[in-house]
Image 1 (cartoon, each protein chain N blue to C red):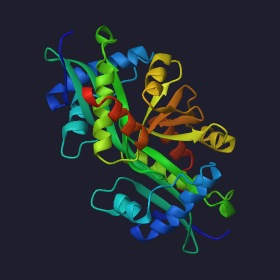
Image 2 (image 1 turned 90 degrees about the vertical axis):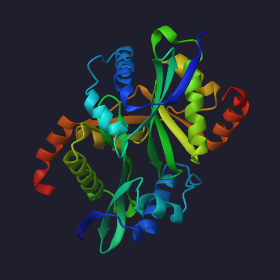
Image 3 (image 1 turned 45 degrees about the horizontal axis):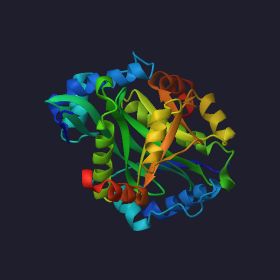
Image 4 (image 1 turned 180 degrees about the vertical axis):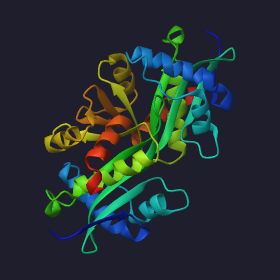
Length: 164
Length: 164
């Protein structure tokens, strides 16, 4: 197996990272979901006040996987990290790269002194669920993620304008 | 009905906010879950680099509700906000205070220019689910929230130490 190198992402990795994010969107059956542009992604992640951090896995200088995460907050457990994406390109799966990225993230999070870390997994992605549980994570079935799009926000505000 | 006043939280609100967080933990059948201390909460939320923001609802200068949220990041939709807690004390429920706090949060989030906002709801909390859906949010059933405690992180690191 060729050597896998894990390192912190830098701004010039943005295009390669976004390619993996698009690959995940395709896998999750949402090919048109990625609205973030490369310019925006560079500003958001690599500017003065980064909104996320990212580790990349490289083989022969090619980025084949990412662990992208951001600081979050639990009113029960305090400061925490949310792992937003753990992606390995299809051709390189099954070689331990996802595990290496997860290890790097867990090690980083533990060193930062948080009481807990979190992420989300799709309920039909059994291999991922088994992988996380095997390594000591708890997969909850009683929470439902709720989202409101910009369009829904606008509609809500227009409807309730008088009382805002 | 007495007038409800919504405003941004300040450091001296911490004890009253934590009392509501404890009330929610009791409601969610996890009375011993709150590990955050008041000192830590003040540092985390009201220091130089706040990890969360909070609106409080007051009646006659008494805090009866909160909407506590933090900046998050979607690799599909970009910068976003996660509503961590929307709490109204039991005695003041059914008076529109939760709705007023939700409005304030949605209005704030929309003004900040994000494409999406998010939160989580317990699957047995049907009144909350109905409330959110009525106001245009989408409640997903295919994502599972996954967490790893500090103890599980330590165990994982010890087990995989040689390869980290």
